[in-house]
Image (cartoon, rainbow, N blue to C red; front, side, top):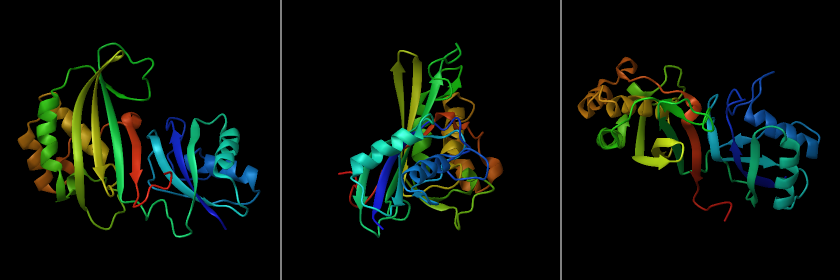
Length: 255
């Protein structure tokens, strides 16, 4: 059966997350239903990351196995037709080797988190950012972020329902940038690692926001990390500002 990689963009608001759930709307379910319109049968696809409810994707990667050969552009166009009106789009499609696996072949996952800082309620950005009313100190947040980079036991920043075998992960990058937009000041968090624990990015950003608001110091973040205790974590921020932005492979399947 020919295998295809799909680069997928979606708005996470209407969904319970990526993973298929019985009688509940999921991104996986929407894509599998579209595939069934093309080849009527049960389809099971695998993705690079199982995003939670409300989390978005700019470039999720999944793979599917088809019974017939499809020209990749034609397959993506047909899927986009059948995905309507869901806020899900196939950005690219590529024929891949049979041993390609969207999850297990990935070398890096990159997340973007957006905080909007302004007093007025968000309108165009509603549901796409985490809005805070106070200004934040980007330099202080970056100083604290450097403490988290590297290989650590991230128990403090791990959900209590996380199913990973070990809390030890290597964080490759956590950059904080202040971005002035027409809609107000945003703070962007660029977070990169081979893999992440459940709620790890949202735990990082919620904690760093406390530093930016001067409620915590960078030293407090170091203390929290070394505590290896979930209770030491700052608040976990909401999912609306989180995006799966990129998945890296040894060879880019989309060229």
